[in-house]
Length: 281
Length: 109
Image (cartoon, rainbow over all chains, first blue to last red):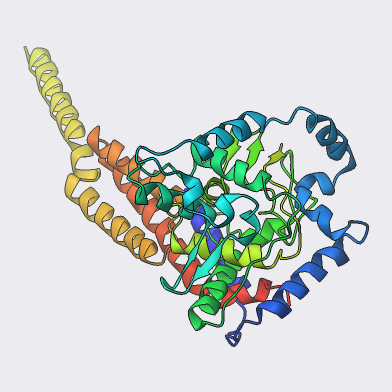
């Protein structure tokens, strides 16, 4: 059965391989412009800032339900937990406030950033765990409630601030951006889907009972409370779950590929406001 | 007397046939060695997919099923699942190789 489906996939793949396309040097500014134009052309009635509301921006019924849900948002418990955790001192007396610019308040829109010393992308989740480790604490799981609570609080203090991701004049930063872009468009898993298959080609369409969110602004709402999960989810959880849903083995959370993917996806949503924490069906 | 002899003879023949029949599946079915070879080939292909950062969950499931069948002594199923895992792993390798260029066709420009 599976051998047959593998053969089918192989056959399908052999038809989808185009002739070699010359690898070009990425132009992030042009990319972001084209990316945003694609979505605003596809959904001409939507305001640019509305894309951060994901499926709720695409479907009127869902939007009405969401408006009502937002009166008592399901992420409130997580937000309260994150606020408390954020200022609670570590065993050494320091806290997260000591690890971040502006004591961590209103800075979500600047993550991820490219660290020129390290030559790699630093996400907010990674920075939070590095802060813990630097202060003698155990790192949190990237896909569980504590990390979601901390990032929920940091996102909440940054609501309304536009994503402001920078690509420094460093070939390694451009390479990280390109790697993230490649990951986004690369088909994987037995279902042969890329991130773009759902979130570029089919936003607003249903996949089973779900309405697919547009890729534009998709990270602005992170972390999210998902009714499907019955709890909060981080960006890491979103990426790894997407991979397993298409029958691909997920990479380790915060592996280079996921960090670069977050860098690319955040950059092309520059200018759109942070709306996290969010709630999704 | 001859009737009894005849009956004994046919009972002996039947027993022989049954014995042979009983032994036959052991000759026709897969051996542990065949399973080990098939499993090693599947594992090697899946490791190659891992080096391309593109393993499939279905490959892992087929490998697990192969191991489980082998543990219960069902080497026919163990070999079949191993071959299935190998086919899936090879498809994931093909996908990763072709996507090295093909991803650009999806790009918003």
